[in-house]
Length: 223
Image 1 (cartoon, rainbow, N blue to C red):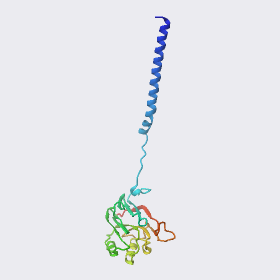
Image 2: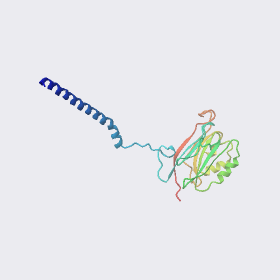
Image 3: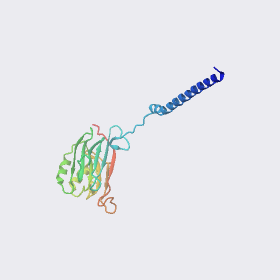
Image 4: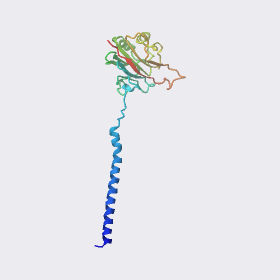
């Protein structure tokens, strides 16, 4: 074999070996590059989105109950009452109605005792009086208006809600918006209340004020 032939063979072998090394190195580097984000992802801290009870912006402290109350919007969208992440009343549950929507909750255990709605435009107002008289001691009372909460409101009912801590029950009238959380054994006025008067000059909707929303943390009653 001539020297020139041997040189050609060695040259071809060198090229093949060099090419193999380059290709192997390239794909190995590519593999490392691709797998690197996975490696980083597995070791990095996972970001968890924390959902507070009832969708509150901030969590409640220990021995506090989370709640959220929304009034109805005109006579179109019904109200909702959430307590400790449990939707007690809402249009989706199909258990709300025109007038006053009320949920009763045990102030110590957080257990829902009863919920109902009362037509304050054309319904029997004595049904609401009977309901209010039957509220046991140590009960939280959550109220949301829808459409018209005030046409059949009388002095006896206003007195009941005032005793539960309301500051606006005495003013409640035709198509006003009202949301409220009170208690049977409250000593002062409740800090959990919002009220908007039906006023043609300020109403958001045609004939109704805007929807109200109230959220917060109410202290658990410790026996």
